Image (cartoon, rainbow, N blue to C red; front, side):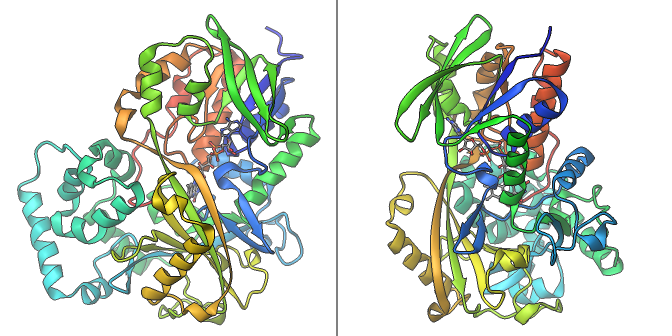
Amino acid sequence: MSRENKTAIIVGAGPAGLTTAYELLNKTDIKPIIFEMTDDIGGISKTINYKGNRIDIGGHRFFSKSDRVMQWWQNILPLQTALSKNGSDPEKADKVMLIRNRLSRIFFLRKFFNYPVSLNMNTIINLGFIRMLKIGFSYLQIRLFPIKEEKSLEDFFINRFGSELYLTFFKDYTEKVWGVKCNQIKPEWGAQRIKGLSVTKALIHAFRQIFSKDFSLEQKKIETSLIEQFMYPKFGPGQMWETVARMVEKKGGKIFKRHKVTGIKCEGNRITEIKVRDENNNEIKSQTGDYFLSTMPVKELINCFENKIPHDVREIANGLAYRDLITVGLLLKKLKIKNETKIKTFNNLIPDNWIYIQERDVRVGRIQIFNNWSPYMVQNPENVWIGLEYFCNEGSSLWNMPDGDFIKFAINELSKIDIIEKDDVIDSTIIRMKNTYPVYCSTYDRFSVVRSFTDKFENLFLIGRNGMHRYNNQDHSMLSAMIAVENIINEIKTKDNIWNINIEKKKELRV
Ligand SMILES: Cc1cc2nc3c(=O)[nH]c(=O)nc-3n(C[C@H](O)[C@H](O)[C@H](O)COP(=O)(O)OP(=O)(O)OC[C@H]3O[C@@H](n4cnc5c(N)ncnc54)[C@H](O)[C@@H]3O)c2cc1C
């Protein structure tokens, strides 16, 4: 079948959509057309420029176990000079990928704990002797008498860490993030995220760190959550995706911003047409195409079908849940909290990229310190530019709070836990982002019904994070796009190879 004069309709200009377009333009004659409902490029991986200070929707590490993805990124933005002969000097060039050290710690009891939690003197002193005894005892107890049938995430955690360690470090944070009690989350969530990281492994890692001084990039064998270095574009992840978008357009691809896909028509086992609403004037347009690649949330995709579709497919899709995120950007003269580590930093700023806020008396879940992601994210390096993350649901009281009130609330929270002084706030901004986390509960256990329905359309490809309702990072989202393009090229009909991405067990304990 000739692929000349064929068109691929892509929903969404996030990493998956842009990778699809880029790959199609480089490997085929198929013309990609992207419809993006917002004004921005990059989806959840965008970077917002607020008065010269750049902020991500959660900091985005560029690291993958896939060499293909690692190389792909470096082809777009070369590594900084010190690490690559052909690289660029970030002081002289903008198109450059920095190598950053990772540090993320847990803030609890107004103290810092290592992440992943390690059994060292610092932990013991911070937690106190009594709590440590309880942790040790309950861990031993569960090793001797494990819960036989894990019915919930709570059982999963307790079986691996013991009840006291679970209550101290996992319960509250997990519930903050997902907004659901751990005993109501399916244990498979834990299996997908955590298998492979145990108390023993954390101990071994701590032990190895003492003896290892080699911080090379060759870390692919190490568990993902223990990676100590990552790549990061000089101006944040948005720079990567804006660069790719420009390349796509230069090569003849089309990107229509503020165009929301609202309808889909099918005939037999093929998608024939989509409806798109131009958000500038509300005009509805039709667009035919040969291939359709969707990165929009599965729930919305299914609701776009204008044909009659099986009742259970619609019901399951409508039951899919998402967690949303509010980010408050604060520009500060300084932090109140001081750097007490041995790591030397500019102005002695704490060295963390982000901090998990475990404290029970505040709603904030994580704090990003953008100076430590890239110093070029901050207009005046003397200032500290941080992002406070609130996991919530669209429509909740937190989500609906007026911007000014929310910012005040966020400032009060940080001052309450002694991270900032209110008087040090210079400026602030707020970003609400829907559908940041596809949730694995509600109707998710029947997701295969939806998948079988969409898989039967031979020219429809579900890719990306919300596109597959999968907890995919950028690299998985990109790989799903790359494989979809290969399937198109090789006329492979099955979608199994796309669904097989990111099903290995992961080791991240926290988002
Ligand atoms: C807090 C946080 C931190 C993260 N950290 C990392 C990290 O460190 N490293 C990493 O690799 N990944 C990270 N990720 C994951 C990363 O953000 C995603 O994997 C990636 O953005 C997914 O790409 P995507 O193209 O599938 O989807 P998205 O980024 O969601 O893009 C989809 C696009 O589709 C558009 N769209 C939706 N519906 C429609 C419609 N009907 N019509 C037209 N357009 C539509 C959206 O506006 C959006 O632009 C993080 C995610 C979060 C939430």
